[in-house]
Image 1 (cartoon, one colour):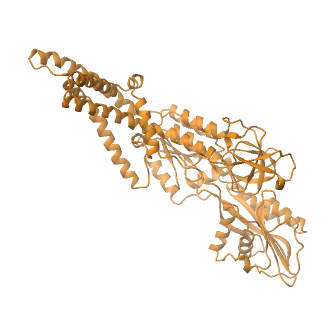
Image 2 (tube, rainbow, N blue to C red; image 1 turned 120 degrees about the vertical axis):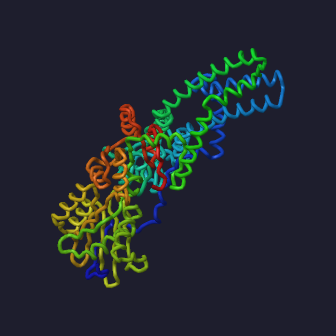
Length: 571
């Protein structure tokens, strides 16, 4: 598009120069590493608690070793010797190490709960003091508090780039909110005061504007608190191999206990009676403790091979269980697709040159700091256009993207009085902008926008008001981009007999389109964390072993409930 004009365009009084770019959204806290020294110390304390006889009774082999350790210790006290104390120490170390390994494995759920709590405690809330509806926020007094201090009917100011500190309702303003950490849906949603789109959830992030939120949840009853309860309440299902191995170990332990008990009378009759320490040492070497040691060594070897492929295994049991997985559930955002929607195509309307549409889309997106806006600039660059600097434009007046207008753009004016206004945004809002300036929108704009929506994408309309008058230029197609090579990997899993199910917070139409493109066997749309848990439990009740992959807070309960949880970092 030419960056010159013939006549002056009346200024849009609603537009204003852009302020400094909004800070990037706060990165969601990642999973806590249970092998860090601090968390390992916690696991050591938990392993000591497992010396409770009621805990040991559930593990016959370990119970026998613990009883033997106690007997050798008493024997060493009654008849002190280096041999007796040496055997006692080794037996107690065996018991403690076995408990420690189990405590580390169990630390996964506690680490996830800690990660969720950190989301709540790291957030700073700006509570408004003596604020009333309609009051000017410029003169409002704020107090920095933690989310735990917020009570129902408190008013909180949340600005672009900040995290919503608690569940509540928007009572002033409107903004786009990134709810992917809660719902798994990559598309930002509009939240505004009044109506049925005012509810916001703690832990989500504002992408634009500023709003006042009235807190509705009591401390301990928020969405994050419910997620913590789900994570801590989730129980890991034992695999069939584990159950069979436990039965075998218990049977062999009983056999060898009888062997050692009958050995002492025969040794005494032969005049070679043995001490308690020797008998216990013999029993421990006979019972299948070596099987457990070999299984651990095999698991560690498998974990080392996975580390070479950038997979960090937190439990050897997960490696064993992964071999029997029959159902794989995959969170869409960040696992199957990239984290944000991206612009993938410019579709000019009849009579509009493709280069003019790309140029107008790029200029109208310079003030749009959302990931979608940046992707439009990137798409224009792939068409050979270089984004201009501000000093290269003629008296630009940028229009930042706003949740109220759902548009971004720029007004350009030249010394001769000529001007040009460009807008890009939601199809309905941009079409109305054209009509208010006296222009018309061709029917193809609505038809092609509907086609983009039907394909699971999001249409954006680009318009201009210059020497040719106000008019629509074309459509920008936004979509969730499926990661390269994903379809081929799903085909390979299908050949292995593993059923794949995509889980997403998107609507069924969008979910169906992404599922078809990715090549998964099935999908679950508009899924809540409770829906994911219910699906996993139904699969497990049917005798199937389930693996779950995800990267958001909303995935934490499902990751804890699944037989194998795969926490995606960067994807």
